[in-house]
Image 1: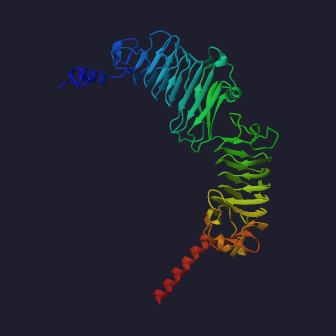
Image 2: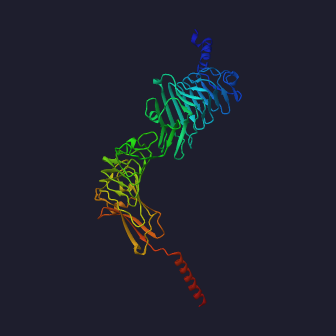
Length: 480
């Protein structure tokens, strides 16, 4: 029989041998030398050779490694740094990526960040004498649940051809669950670039990005007074009216640290008596505290976009069409509503904080229910009566009481009390003398009313006398 040469053992053995050879790839290096040592010492690495290519280089916590191989770092390498990397002189990063953990430190002299990406976890340190931005740099700051410990380099510098410098500062709030605060990310000892907040936040060389904000309102900005990169989280933004056009969407009308217009989840305060106008969607889930001021429509419609509005006793909601789109509104006694159209849409909550004796009736013109993410229905609304400030239980008001909370001129929905009762109602902070509170729709007035009973509460002295009287009666019966 004639043998096929491709099935012969002599052919198969070399073929299998080739298949078993590893594919060429970059070598990974892990520091396993003493806690303090030089980069160039081969035996300080698990490979028994110092890193010389673009593999992954790992320096664990507790180790301090001196880079002693010259000014230029390995181009394109990735360093996972939980220990310390130091160099007394210049170190050019050469397009490398540094993942600096919570115990990681970059220290020493002049740090030329030439095309590097540096990712810092909260707790990381950078104490080089210079932080020189050059080429394309990305600086990523990963906050912990409570914030970020500021990096403290020496002087901020720009290097090389300024026309090709492209610098990204990015904050990641994935793990953040802390309170309102102003977080310093990088606090330079000095600034040799002449950087200003207007330049930092205005585009050009700088790209600012905030990832995974969740329900937080966050802004990156440059603090001119301290030469620091900062992150403002959930801080109240106050209306100044400096833009002189009265519009909520104009950045110059607010004291935002980054000089930008209001953003999603913002806490906005309007308290200087101005009338502020807005058209279209409010920033998503914003909270607006309206104190002695007015919020109105700019043009035809304002959409509340899941916002919360606190309307104090001296404030007004006015204008044309109010699309209440997922909003919650809290009215103090004395607040006013004079808009032409009041359209409830999706899940709405309305809280009426009664005054000491009454509640000033709100007077929107037209009542509507719109279709949004949910089919339009009164059952999507929650009405809350808050009796915190109510003190009206004098003898002249004992018994049944009724307060008109909202009085519409027109009802476009054919609402009646039977339908209205499918809404959700809540009554909070009622005193012991308040009973039988109930919301109702007045079909004749096209109004929302609150009814309740006021009962006399015996004074402590009266209660004591009643107790003594009962005791005396018992004693008389016992004697008989």
